[in-house]
Length: 222
Image (cartoon, rainbow, N blue to C red; front, side, top):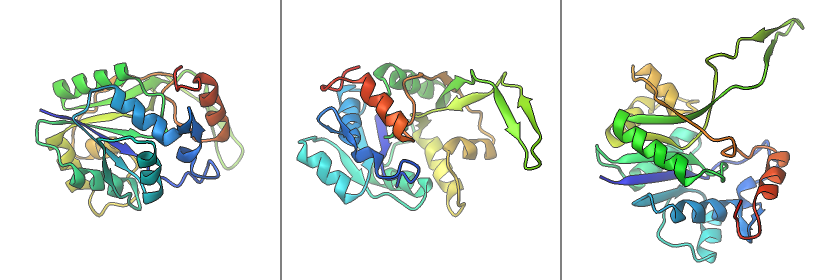
């Protein structure tokens, strides 16, 4: 049985103001940083990076080898499907889908996701909500939301190959799917949570990037 990683790097990063994955990091870019990182884990039989030609060239120019490439799609589903078609998993293989904009993911977390997926069929890293949540309405009124039982979802998200195939078939033609967990719920599958990591945050804004740069040295070590 194989462990396969689909690394999604095809986003436009509109909220960041540019392609954040090409921002400098440890002598390369965020993209090459995360590519080298997941290779170093030695957990995956195949790694598929979903990205455009410019990003592929960056990776190749740094001499990073042993990767598969897939074309990004208009929506997340199309990008995952592109990776799925590039390296199709067997029914009992384990597939992790990770957002390249979370470059500080650890080997330990990936290992936990793999093991939980092998055991339960899927696994989702998540963090309990620690801050106070307040809901504001258009009329200016607001209320504090009960945070017990609320979680912040992360990636990588893990799936048995046969379950991911089922998700791909069910999602076809359904626009706006942003997370495979949404599809799991609609087809009656239970989502299995694994405790996530605070450092495994998504670089969305410039302040996130600055924090990331402050955490690593010139060699990419924390």
